Length: 219
Ligand SMILES: C[S@@+](CC[C@H](N)C(=O)[O-])C[C@H]1O[C@@H](n2cnc3c(N)ncnc32)[C@H](O)[C@@H]1O
Image (cartoon, rainbow, N blue to C red; front, side, top):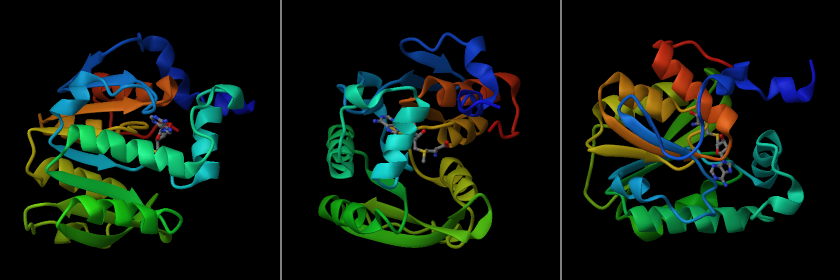
């Protein structure tokens, strides 16, 4: 299998028109680089959940998978990406910001979250349901909050499920949607979501999951 086929995510993007603002289920999404001006619909989010690329190599691999060559990439350094992501957060100004973070980015992101929010909690998590894959779910809010302790120690997908089902929000936003777990689970509970994602092929997985009502993973 060629590497391009591996990055096709099941090839479901061929079934959908991935241009412009896409309405899907209870949400609105767009193929978009966060470096471009934030789409107005993103500003309707009052809670953000984001699992951003965790370091410069990871960021670069996402551009490669999106078939964006090095000469066309707006970010050369991870700290530029981080700064731009927090500019978007500031424009959206959500009452709560939840981020999935890793050893490589937790310190700088925590610094940025603490600068913006009075109350910050950090939960242990994992990805791909493997306890060896450690990550953290960090929650910032300006209002004292509880009710999230259930996410401590559980897999990130289950944590996203919990947040989409239980958190207080009108619209949940994710600027780096990937294959769209935030969209999938908020749609499952009839709750509104908005999101942007660099890679049309990855975002199409969310469209496919909602359209076909499938819970299965497409890798
Ligand atoms: C760790 S993944 C998020 C996974 C996601 N939680 C999911 O449900 O699939 C990070 C995502 O950020 C996207 N991304 C990277 N750089 C971006 C950029 N400049 N603008 C928007 N999205 C970007 C990547 O393509 C990737 O899908």
